[in-house]
Image (cartoon, rainbow over all chains, first blue to last red; front, side, top):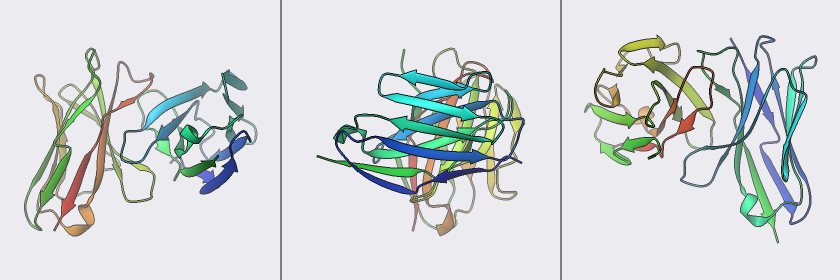
Length: 112
Length: 113
């Protein structure tokens, strides 16, 4: 089955710096890759997703890149702000009708 | 349009009791997914249901755990004879169709004493 690895597990940056979180997946059939943000004690919320027919997607300060050959995808946050501090999860899904498989999460801390 | 609702938000049970967790999907959503999150860990898939059908239960423990999504009413995750290791946050998510974005509920935090 699918296996998703996520790195780093913790990431500390200064306000205004960029943050990059990387994930690798094992199932070459996976074609949907969402990223979720979870603040302490709250529900995971989708922040951006990418499908396998696209190499990059951007939404304001957030971007995701996908390399299908290498089976990895990354989240990039530019001009980080303290409110970006949270746990970020990547996930992969092999096909519609199957489960999302999540990475173990990255705790991002942005200090002002 | 209300989001995904879960209740109770917090549930305390003693070892050996039963826990019932409820999930009401977003309006118009007929696909429900249950995930378990242990402290400082990721979300682990448990079961995927459509109305009256279990589509994928590959993540469910073989014993004590069951799930249903009846034609009317919420989806229910049932844990019989709870043990301390069942203490976790249980999230459900719903989607409009199988290939679409999953929206998460606020979770139920189960504590087993």
